[in-house]
Length: 458
Image (cartoon, rainbow, N blue to C red; front, side, top):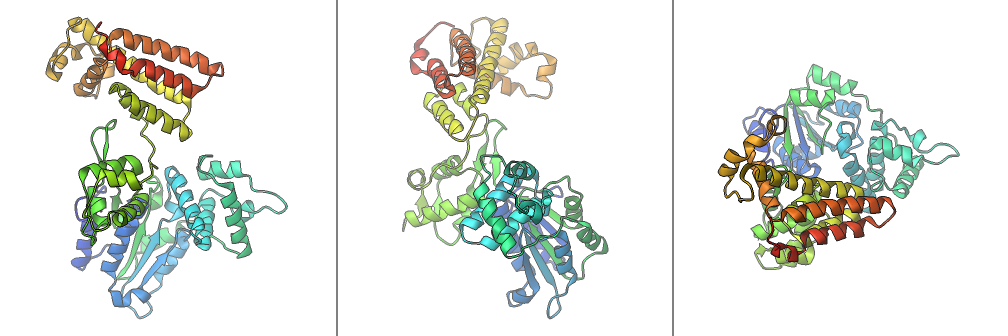
């Protein structure tokens, strides 16, 4: 899996899952292991680490698992209590709400909702209460006497976008919590802080399996300083605006023992359709393994037959499609972006920025060499890069500018200027009430339609 066996991402101290397992093999485990990044992958790694720390015969008594609603005080209490028959003790803490970053609030809320849908009502309700407590909401705030939940305020405090918030789930979970008198302790880190300062009893280890944590929290820093912190997530390669998911290590782990593998084309399609959510990826891989039957290789055709797209396009996907002069891809990104709730005005701004940048690079080269096409990045760097203003070029590599120039050469000068004018007209039309999607489709067809490629003027 990503982050494991020395092949995955490294934490601040250079630790990997293999580093942690080596501690155990050498008989010198650290008191704390904080595994964060992707919640699904972190939990898989945490379970592997916990299994190495506690022999199978002792796990029923000396391995304690705490759910996401556990408070710092509850964690400290477990760590201060010895195993039933002595010896070491491991406390495995799942996705603690008190460490969750605001950026991961939507995912944490979604996982609570998924648990509710699966019938795990108690777990789902406790997860929700813990997230609410972190945001400053008590059970009484969630169930005011004679009143209703202020869902707008709760969603804002949780950090969950309106499109991802589910009022019906919240109300049902709160009713469940009230009826069963479920409670979550206050998010007070002092007890766990004190336990870390004192040090745990010999052989007691805290393993935290988290999603994205708030690295600014003093408790996160203290946990990392007390042991090892390992960030475990799906890796990416390439530049920031042209990244590719590296799913190979995760897929190998998910298919271990099946005798099956995913080829490169299938990996690429899974990346495009599922994205970096390892939990969803695991579910889809299980379906694919069943779908191919006795076949050993899972290919792109299998992925397309089984997997439904759930991954959002990256912000720069529309600009990339335009620069590649790929009309079907651009229209597909536009459709998905609007279906996912994207603002047509935001998309128009992105398009305008892309077209404007190509115009700038084309004109910059035109000033340097006239209408002659520059054939290599070295030539461009020698002839054109000196014309880039110092404040614009600072900290940037010439190759990025060269790539934008190459994209601009797929269009004539007139096409780019016409495209920018069309975007300005679309902006006025959209602000006058016309359908944004239709206006943007017109701009894309006008700019990218293959018939334009035949135009030969510069």
